[in-house]
Image 1 (cartoon, rainbow, N blue to C red):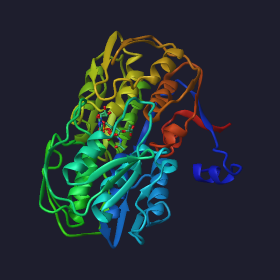
Image 2 (spheres, rainbow, N blue to C red):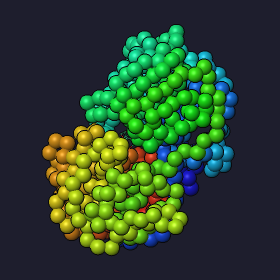
Image 3 (tube, rainbow, N blue to C red):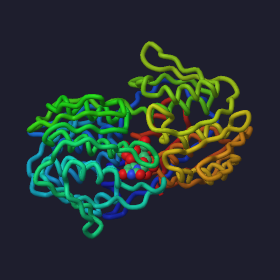
Length: 437
Ligand code: EPZ
């Protein structure tokens, strides 16, 4: 029964709360197809606000966050239709509404990605300021700074960011913050600059593949963007953009999660629809742990058959080690033969999984933005609580190798970013099932 069905079955207003029940110990074997990238699909869907005509997107994952953004886009006058299990069709039908309200934005932070498109196309954007987040402090000052550099007036109205501009003017700007570049901040400025007059140059732009995929999409719609994928991006404004057909890139974070699933179970997986070139920092660390990762005929093969070596990991902006794989890598290193040090440089407080992993018998000691991982011989099954998307993935991975049964509660966190992960894991030998509470 799909999540959608279950939601339809749940009594009105009652969110069905599931947990995963995992019996650990099985070595994973087989092939897994990686889905489309959530963090590319979301800004690209928001960019449809900029376009005349129809936008058709392929490889958009069927995730809670995608469904949530569609609710917001519909509210903003963008009609959406999804072919059964297939392409997503988006078309702007009404440009009156420019307000993304608290009750929608508070459900999903990435809703902030409508800020730039609304301002650029409708010259007005009122978007609820995203609130607190389990992974730490996440201000959006750089997003606003970028819009102001393009000539927008900004103010905070009852918790909403209100931006207005008679016209947008291209500008040179530095978009780096205390933790380096900003991914959705770069995406927002990129989208707004496409319809600004003149040239915009973004220094310290995020280089993530998801930002490059957005730029490729916008260029296919008629934008003039160069330098994407590097810290210096140039946008020459155009008068208008037209909808196009685009295939979203594979999800490197889902792929990395399955690489670690193979490694933690001493298994062997073939990942299809996986772009190894987007994961070089991850592959480098996993190979040092002792995992074999090769390009195979149909995809990427990942195999591990011996003891795991300890390594140190420091998260950085792309092409460095992704913060979105920090928790999953910590779960793996819990079983390494020695001590590893994990340093979180992007979200220094992103460690809610530490206490839960310790409940499973891990030896983790947190010191500021660093965790000392003392390797143990085994983990034991326990009831644990998911707190955010990637922390929940780490708990599921730990459950795959733990002795006995692990129950991961609040898996709605994992449904936000992984499409039917329990079915994919079960298809390669994991003993995992979704249980409705
Ligand atoms: C994106 O979030 C991703 N989300 C996150 O993935 C990911 O963890 C993050 O980039 C870093 O890679 C989406 O793409 C939807 P940032 P984003 O702005 O754009 C600070 C997941 O699990 N900052 O690059 O919100 C910020 O506090 C999610 O899929 C400012 O100071 O992250 C952080 O320390 C979780 N001011 C750093 O920059 C700003 O205006 C990087 O944040 C913006 C950010």
